[in-house]
Image 1 (cartoon, rainbow, N blue to C red):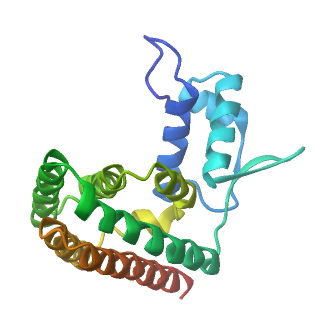
Image 2 (tube, one colour):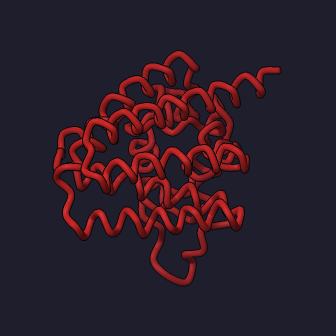
Length: 222
């Protein structure tokens, strides 16, 4: 099975990276699993050069390890490393929420409300995959509206996908409702232009995200 580009141009390294990333998130590629170039070429229809570029891109994101003479493998992330990442994210995303509350344009505030309305529908209609995509868009809008390019770049570096844990976190109805309730509190503070409350609510939201992931990891180890 390929990406379906046989009738058109060959897939780019970005498209191949997206293909691999999605399979890591779904658990179809497990931590420490070796990625064989010829297998990826056959399944995606990409060239060897583009596959290697995709590997390098994913390694820069923290998803793959590349070792001389061994090739690429899915990176395994310890729970302690995830904890440190979430501590840093809580601080940085708290700042973006506070800055957004003060600096965002009317259009950005309206867009945030629109995404929130769609998130509500995702919870009601049990659409976890769409919720995950909108959740990422919601958080990115806060970064964009905060006006801090540097913090945005730091968050990108910290946003190491947590393999099956991050994907699974959107497949429990109660977790979806909890995350959405957090979003409502953050949005309320933002609409009242209360920077302090927005920061505190965002910090609590990110910290709750780590607690959720640690519970999933514990369940996997049982």
